Length: 520
Image (cartoon, rainbow, N blue to C red; front, side):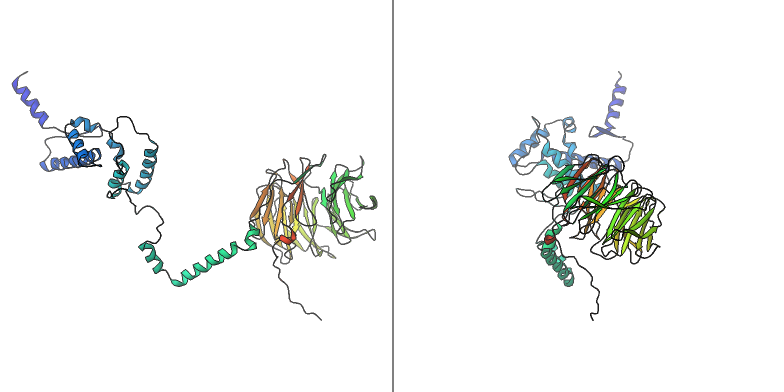
């Protein structure tokens, strides 16, 4: 090779400056002006100084620092370039808002990572590499023994700090007084009996389960009822059985054989007579003490799926779309309501026994009054059959109703103003509704698709608890005379007893509005 060629190659190598950072080469040609070359060199020096600082920081003493500096001064430039310190130098242009998240991630990663053998970057003293990382990222200087730092971007509670005292001094004294009063009221309420009552726990396991073979899985029937004398009646196919809560005895009450089947039953208010609606359209009245049928009421041409007592008056709803009022004492009909276009599947008298609510398979809810053939109110908000009906014993004129599978809602109406008050979507078929006698709560039973029993607060419409256990639609519901226990029947052929509500002496006093009256 000629001498001129060697000189040209040496000149070309001298004109090329190589700077390296994280295995990336930046080549700046010699034709650039001096100002650009000076800037690039200064940047390279700054970055190399930062790398060198992370490699060579003296933590324990001057002697160790001198040894580290001597070792690194003797180290070739290429070895420094291939070090692992770059993993702690973030390249975050325009991403300062995520520094806190990055530090938390690196802190967790560093705590879980075991030190490698032969590593030169072990924790020394009370200051670690993560403390150095905080210093460079957040601009926090290193402190004496333990590094105490805080960032303006991190939320933290600091009691008795000057900033907090300044904030409290700037608040209006009236606002502070109101806040203190609320805190005092909260403490008093939590110590009161009302709060303890609201926090009561309801057992989610039934305390008794009875087998009920041949209990029909039919949404339109009403096959269980609990009398005021604490006797539960259950219809199984064509037979009616009685279960006594006093002695836990089961008695076969009556049997219709193959001639007929039981579609509904209900006890009279005194609890000594049981009315049974049959598939042929007849209503049979039995005396409990004599275990004997005393009367047969006729008038329907199809099955009687719903019954309701009002004093000595018994009304029956049938698949023939009519409602008949009977007087068993006089053995005659006293009235008839016609308005539904399909089967009447729900009947309930109001607590004052002046109004009768009826629900039908035509998705309608009617309110009737004695002596009138025209409904007092008509509600058509439901989109499915209305079987679940309940009157509130705590508020006059409050009526609730539940819709079937296509509706799934519970709605509340004021029958005095014929207005809807509220409604809630339960997410499943509503089979039964019943208000508690002791507290302002109600219970609902459901079918497709969760088969649950739900206790609700009214008027908040908040769930108190959800009871699960039935494997089929919870079609039937009854309540004990004391209002504490409910019994549910389902298509899984079981009866389950639940302690859903508190006893009367444990119940909250119910606030009622008394109208002023003149006493003469």
